[in-house]
Image (cartoon, rainbow over all chains, first blue to last red; front, side):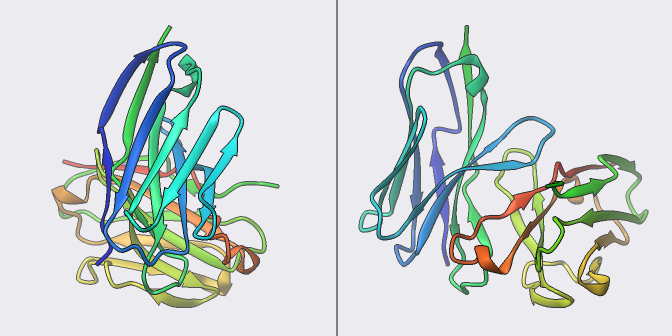
Length: 113
Length: 116
């Protein structure tokens, strides 16, 4: 059974710092991994999707990497801003290949001005 | 393009009462998902529809939860009777068949349920 874990659960950093969020998964037979952002009272927004054939994806100040063999992914945020404050969730497809996603519990990030 | 719509946004009920949530997916999206997100946890899939049919309801507590998707468009999720542990945010998401390879799901704002 696929399990997804995110560390740390919460993170507080001063504005301008570079930071790394971690995600691990138990079953390496995945065909992609996604990172989502969730703002309070709002739904999830997809940030980056990495296919299993890729090792990383970049969007602006965000860079996500994927190492299937070790069951790990990282989300790197460069030059953090207060507007980056949110909960970040990683998710992988369920083994049934129906489109279902298995989520980690999220990392809540606070960037202080 | 309009996003996924959900209503109500907030609901407070007493335990043992009934409640229903409504979701309108993005136009043309064949797949619709209902997720339950308990505070401090990631979303967990309750039920997945492909058009009118159920694809996965393995984690739906069928003794109290039910869902339907009439005409392959809107969907309702019902809880009857509610328990304290049902307090959560209920998220609806949709995706189009052409997105299956990327699994891009578009999420609504959610309904926050509090059971007292």
